[in-house]
Length: 322
Image (tube, rainbow, N blue to C red; front, side, top):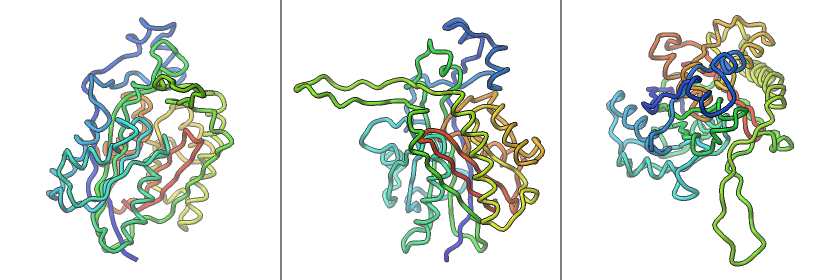
C-alpha cells in the first residue's frame, strides 16, 4: 500500500464581512439572538467571487507554499454543494485556472461532509498507478442559495474555501474512516432543489433557497456524530484520549459542545472558528484545519479526527496522523 500525507493546507475567504448587527437590519433578529444560539458573530460573503474563484485562490496558495508546479498534480477534487454550474465541474475550472494539465478533475457533493468524503476518495485513488500528488479543496459560495430574509437559515451560512495537498509519505496517514448516509432524512436540509416540469415547452427551472429542520438536524448531529467518531476510533485502534484534536464541521457551537460532552472529551480539544466564518459547509473543516496548522494547534505526528455532518443526511469521520 502506498502511503501519503497532508503536505500543505490553505484557506481563502471573501473580504466582505457581514456582522450579526447588519443582518438585524434585514430580518427580525439580533446579535445576541444569533450568538447565543449558534456561536456565530460574523461571516464572509462573496462580492461576486464564485465557488471556483475561491477554490482557485486556495489552489494557487497551496502550490506557492509547497513549491510544486501545477503539472505535478495528478488529481483535483473539489467538494462543494454550491458549484459554479451543473457543468463544467468546479474542479475542471480550477484546473484550467492554475494550468494543472495532467490532473484528473471532478466535483464531489456530500454537503457538509464533503471534505472528508473527498479526502477518502483521494486516498483511494492515490493507491492506483499514476496517482502520486492530489489536491482536495472544499469550496462554497452558499450566499447564492440563502434567502436573506429567513432568519432560520440566513444567519447560519458564510462563503469560503480551504484545501490540502496530498503527497507520498514514508508513514501511513489515514488510520480510519467512517462514511454514513441517512437518505431517509434527506428532506431535513434542502437547497437548490430543481423541479422537472410536466408541461412542454417549459421555462428554465429555478433554484430553491435553503430550507432546514433545525431541531431535527441538531438531534441528528448530536447523536450520530459521536457514534461516527467512536466507530472510527475503534477501527483505528486508538482511544479518544489519544486523539489530540477533533476538527468538527462548524455548523453550530452548541452542537460541537454537546458532541464533546457525549464523547467525554474536554472542549479544549474541539477548536472553534464558527464565530468568524459561520457554516461554510464543505469548506468548513478544511478552513479549520488550515487555521489550526498555521496557529500551531496541531503538529506533525499528532493524531487528529476530522468529522463532518450535514445534508444527505450524512456523517463522515477520518482519523489520521497529521
